[in-house]
Structures are given as C-alpha cells and as structure tokens.
Amino acid sequence: MTNHLIDLLRSRQPDLSRPFAEAPDGTVYTYADLERRSAQYANALIALGLAPGDRVALQVEKSLEAIFAYLGTVRAGGVFLPLNTAYTAPEVAYFLRDAVPAVFVCDPASLPTLAPVAAAAGVGSVLTLDAQGRGSLAQAADAAPTTFADVPRAADDLAALLYTSGTTGRSKGAMLTHGNLASNAFALVETWRFTADDVLIHALPIFHTHGLFVATNVTLAAGASMIFLAKFDPDGILKLMGRASVLMGVPTFYVRLLKSPVLTPAAAAGMRLFISGSAPLLAETHREWSARTGHAILERYGMTETGMNTSNPYAGARLAGTVGLPLPGVSVRVVDPVNGRELIIGAIGMIEVKGPNVFTGYWRMPEKTAAEFHDGWFVTGDLGRIDAAGYVQIVGRGKDLVISGGFNVYPKEVEGEIDALDGVIESAVIGVPHADFGEGVTAVVVARPGAGLDEACVLAALEGRLARYKCPKRVFFVDDLPRNTMGKVQKNLLREQYREIYA
Ligand code: ATP
Ligand code: MG
Image (spheres, protein in one colour):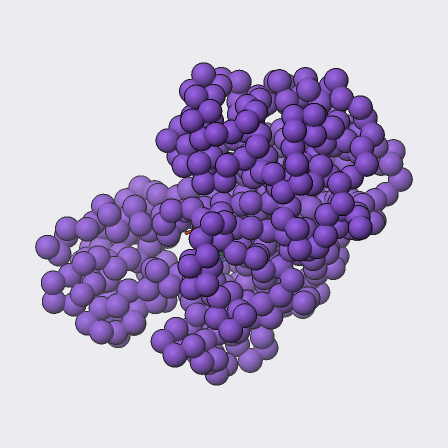
C-alpha cells in the first residue's frame, strides 16, 4: 500500500528544480524543497509520537511552513486539522476537546494562553509556528532528516478533519479522506485546465477548504506553482497579475479589486482565469468584472464536507448568478425537502450531492451524520434549482428560508429585486419572528452614500415587482453587512440584531 493522497499529488510533479511556491519575502521554494521540508515535518511529528490517524491541530498565521507541515502530517499518516486564526481561547478549547489531537501548534504569542487550554484538553505535545514560519515546530523540523518513507494510507483513510465555518450554527468536524481530497483536486485540474505552467496567486487563508485544498492541492496536482501572499492585498495582487495566470478568490476579493483604477484589460491581460467561490458572487460583480477586464469570472460551489461540487465551465458559458455544472464524477440533484422526492427541472428544493468528494461523516456526531445523508446522498443544506442545461443555481441556505404567513420566501429573489434598485450596493433579506406571520420578511440594505434612499422608497419600488407576501415589512439601512473571513454574510447576527422589531 502507498500513501494515496501524496502519491497522487506527486503523479504530475514536474522536474524537482521547478518552483512550487514563492514566499511573501520573495524566497522561491522548489518541488525538491517541498519534498525535503515536508519530510522533515513528517520525521519531527513521528519523533513526537504521532501514530497513523492521530490529529495534528494548528492555529497559526498563514505561512509556507504551515503548508509543509500539512503535507508532512499527511505523509506521516496523520490527520491535518487547521483552525481559523480568529478563534478565541474558549473556542480553541472546544475544538481541542472535540478532536483530541496528539499535537497542537499555535503562534508563539498565544502559547501562554493556549498551552494550559491544550493541556486541559489532554493534548500530548504543544509547539509553535509564527507568521514567518519560525517556532519550536520549525526547529524540530530543522533538526530532522530530509528524507522520509511515507506512511501507507488507503483512499478511505482520513487525511483531514476540517471544521465547517459555523455560519449556521456550531462548527462541525468534517472527516475527509485521502480519496476525497485527491479526487476533488484532479476533478478541478481537469475542469479548470490547470497545467505545470500555471502560476496561482494564493491570497486566501489556509485554514479553510478554499485556500488549503482547492488552491494548494490543485497547484500540487497539476505540478504548477503559486505566489503565496500572507493575506489579501488588492494592490499586491494587481502588481502580480503580470506574472501569474490564475486567481482564486472569495467574492469580496473581486468587489475590492474593482475599486482600483489600476484594474484594466491591460493589467489582467496575462491572466488565464479568475475563479470565485465560498459565498455567492453578485451577478453585478460578474458583469462589472467582464466589462473592466474582458474576463468572465468562473464561479464554483463547494463546502467543507464535500470539497467542490459544481463549477461553471472553462470553455462553455460562465453564467452569472449560477454555480455551473457538476464536476466530473460528482452528481447533483434537487429534492423536495418535505418528501425527499427528486424535483423536476427548474423547481427549487434541497440540493443533494453524491460522489468520491463527499466526506465520510461528522467527527463524533453519528446522529448528525445520519440526519444529513438521504439514500446515500449528502444533504447540503443549500436550496437551489437546476436548469434544462444542467446549470445549478443556489437560492440560499435552507436555514435562511423565510416562511411568512405559510408562504416560502427565498431571500435571494427578494435581494435580487432590491439590489437592482438605483443606489443599492447590496442587501440581505432575513426572517424575523412575527406574531401574525410567523416570520416577517425583513431587508437590511447597504446604499451608496448620498443615494437618498429610505425605507418608504424601497418599499414603494418593490410593490408590483414582488408578490405582496414576499415584500419586506421593514427595511433597515447599514454601512456594511456583517461578514466572516470567507466573505460569508452572517445572517444569524442580523436575525439576532433585529429579533424584536415585530414584538
Ligand atoms: P456551517 O456549515 O458551519 O454553518 P458554512 O456552511 O458557511 O458553515 P463552509 O463549508 O465553509 O461552511 O461553506 C459552505 C457553504 O458556503 C455552502 O453550503 C454554501 O451555502 C456556501 N457557498 C459556497 N460557495 C458558494 C457559491 N459559489 N455561491 C453560493 N454559496 C456558496
Ligand atoms: Mg455548511
């Protein structure tokens, strides 16, 4: 037996002297460096007592050393568990108690706070790694041998335990296998036509499926290279476009890049592909980007539990407001959330997926796992429809559906009408407890400064455009919608904020 994920990621490895990644300080790491450095991390972890299947949890700033530690963990037969850098000590305590990792790595500055937290959770070893890739873990790697015989792992062995973003409730640990990660990486290489000549601008966090698995594994699977940025920086990205070929971003990247006058067709001329995901891309952003750069953003859809499920096509039409077609090997269907029956083309229902990308279950939550699978299909929690050409359109999360007076109101439809009004930048429609209607449709709107919009004019503009039961009962104006680091609008915070308006 071999190490399934590592062997497959190596299968198109280029000449070892070719670059794998350029660090923020300009240092270039070749594929040979990647092999050596990940071997050192694997050796260091084994020396700490890591056994196959043990979790290695990290809450560290973004660095290439953290990427080498990820690959070292997988080579050593471990299960990689990255944690959002924004989590506070009590949150980290929850994850450590839940996942019981053998090793926990944190920023040296957090060590005084987190070492006792880790000890209380029963974690064996606590080490450090900082934003420059220095710390006791890196030192242990420095001292370790540069070659390593990969620990054998099969396709159905775990490679990662990745917690969901916690947008709709407490984060759940998704158990991802070697086979899940490998199959998804190659499906994306094929769909997005990645080759060894590609240079990816990597500006995403690496504690999430997007920056860790989509960006990094696709680069490795294609034998390509990446320019690794510490964080999203629009000016830095605009400067790099001349020597890169692909950008992967969340929608807010594109919104912010559009604000720069430097974004012109000439600036983007050398780029091959702009990809967006993790949150809905406004059709308006898609159109503006095409007008400003001549490139149609390619939107795709995925989640922690499944990796990527659908993508707009590379060669065919990239339709704004859709997430495209199922990836090779992945099946997508839409069912009636009440009776579970598959729906006809165009009807809105629950999106379910099946394929080699789908995780094996939630860590230590067998009931939750059982509840989210339906006849072997994973119930995504997202509502959507599939058109006659097979394009999937997401209309929102099941948990965000508003039921007002017994009628289903899909927030996306109402948001679309509001966003189309002059002077509106964006909006979020939520359901708020209402004594008569159960839930009252409520709009939270970000208007352009000086647009002169008020509640009455938004309500008047919607009258006649939307059935009465879909029209908001109240409209509120805010400067910004609350978003998490992946650019997801946190509707739970809005629901909380406006909880008592109809009381
Ligand atoms: P939790 O499951 O803990 O509530 P989460 O669902 O936000 O958090 P992730 O796994 O990071 O955690 O996000 C997956 C979700 O992101 C999808 O279920 C979907 O709702 C949303 N999403 C991802 N890509 C897109 C997209 N292109 N368009 C619309 N929504 C998207
Ligand atoms: Mg989710």
